[in-house]
Each structure stands twice: as structure tokens, then as C-alpha cells.
Length: 258
Image (cartoon, rainbow, N blue to C red):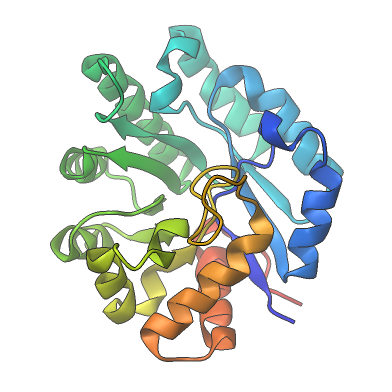
């Protein structure tokens, strides 16, 4: 049986409301024993906390996502440090920059991202960062903030950008996109990168895998991501499962597998 950690799953999303227990059961049957569940907006924090408290192997992160900017107000940012001090999440996030969305409020995104990086630095927590058409700026902002560790979720950058992130102590979150043969640059990076900087993720319910287009993504499919990465690297699936689980345990300060 594989021992996998889904380093980025939105298991609290409404898409899972009808059958969340079954989704969890399928994940565990597939070897996905633990999941990191990052928040996207302050109004979801309480439900996310309660979900993670109710099920073993679910670990919350709290942050304000750039794609949900319309749902954020300054008091949410002001409340984040107290929430983190009280609830002790494994990371700050999901936060970051997204310049792909229509009419992005770039300055507001930057303000929210900078402050969340400062909070992560002050609490010595890793960051779960989102970056679309903004990776160079995300890297520069991380450097300026002095954040010491984190993950770029759904990494889609260049080999040079990957190397810059490793120097910052950041790992690459790899999920469904790597299963598509047309993702040649990403697949080349994953095939040759140092395995110590590799994390597996699904981004459930989004980013369906090759062969599952149009369907809801779910954590059980992480095993297929793992198999794809193993094939690209020419190693066994157990080797990738073990390495990426160790990486997630190290980054998020999780207990070692039994």
C-alpha cells in the first residue's frame, strides 16, 4: 500500500458536500493517508477547521487566495495572526498572485500577499503560494519578505525559476498538469529535478488529470500523479511515494509515517 500525502486539496469545497465521506474513503483506499487543506477566504476558516478536526489525517492551512479578492476585507487580514496563533495550522495559505484572471486588482493582490508572507515569517510557518502569470514577482516578493520555506502550488514555470525557488527553500507542487503529454517543459523539469524539492498534489476538485477531463478531481487520483512522476523519472512508484511523503512531513512539520 502506498503512503501518500496530498499536499494541496480543497476537500472543504462545496463540490464535495454530497459525498465527502466517500471521497475520503476512496483516498485512503488509494494510499492517500493525509491531506493538506488550504483555505481560500476568511469566511471558510471555521468550517475548514471543523472538517480537519473531525477526520484524522487532514491538516489545515489558513490564508486569503488572490482569486477570491472580492471576498476579502482588511479586517480579515488583521484577524489572521490571532487565528494562526490560536489554531496552529501547518502553513499560511493559499495566498499569492494571479494576473491571469480578468481585470486583476494587482495592487490589492500585492498588499494581501506581502502581509501574509510577513505573518508566515513571524510565525516561522511555510507558505502555500499560488502564482499564475506572476511567478517572477512571487519569487521576488518571497525573497524580500524573508520567508524561509514553502511550496509553489501547481508549479508551471521554467527550470531557472525552479532553481531560484529551491534556493529560497521552496518546493514545487506537482499535480494533474504533469499527466498531460503536451506539458513538455513541466515534464522535463519533473524528470530531472532534485527529488527533495518535489511535492505531489491534486488541487481537488480542480485540475483533473489526463483521462479525467471534465470530471471532478479528487484526492484518490494522487496515486495516478505519483505513477506518472515515477515513470517520467524512471523509478518505482514506491520510491516517489516515499520521497514526497518525507518532503511533505519535513515542510509541514508532520509526524513521520508509522
